[in-house]
Image (cartoon, rainbow, N blue to C red; front, top):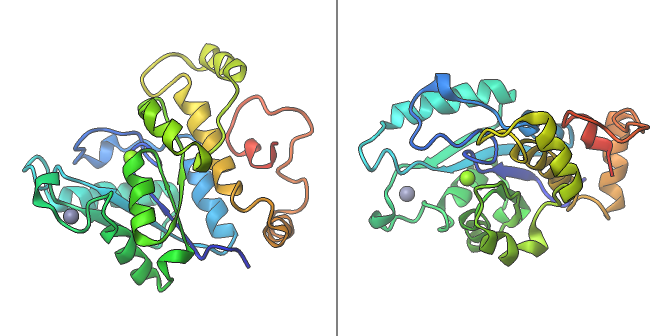
Amino acid sequence: MTPFSAVLFDRDGTLVADVPYNGDPERVRLLPGAAEAVALARSLGLATGVVSNQSGVGRGLITADDVRRVNERADALLGGLDTWVFCPHTPETGCDCRKPRPGLILTAAARLGVPPAACLVIGDIAADVLAARAAGAHALLVPNPATAPAEVARFADQSAPTSSPRSARRSRGRRGRGRLGGARRPLAGHGRLRGLRRPLRGRGRLRAARRSRTGRGRLRPTRRPRTGPVLLLGAR
Ligand SMILES: [Mg+2]
Ligand SMILES: [Zn+2]
């Protein structure tokens, strides 16, 4: 058993590279570690979902069907989550679903048949954390380079740990410096996986469950991992 029954991920900037108002499935790119994080949640027996603001629909830039097609592509790349919900409204609409309002999380929890308090919401900006709070769910911020420093500081107590500056520098040197390259990749992937584990850590039941499913040490490299978020599953 885990303290959570479900993990609800933000989409853009958390699972997939943020392409503003993307309506093209061909442009979907998973962020490093995203598929592994979903797989880890599933291996722990957790339900999984995505809660995403898609105001491009309300702005007339893309259609709801565009969003669904993009979601289907992402879902295929991620190995399949249990539910996808999105808010199509603009901020001016004042709807109850757009994060930081709680509606998307309440809807996803209802679809999954779990109470909001048993959901862990993972996102990259303050609105994700605030929506979780408003819904009575738990939250974890996984910052990326686009996350405002003030938001990272504000939610430091519920942020995923990130790589040390030294390892980030090493990573930048290896990975190139594109907008989605460099620090974003190792930090995002590393933080997402460790972040998922962190609330679980310290609860012996969960660690035991994880070990029994994955085999003790199987994902635990003997040397510090050089690349690859999967290896980081077992890293300290
Ligand atoms: Mg986001
Ligand atoms: Zn809405």
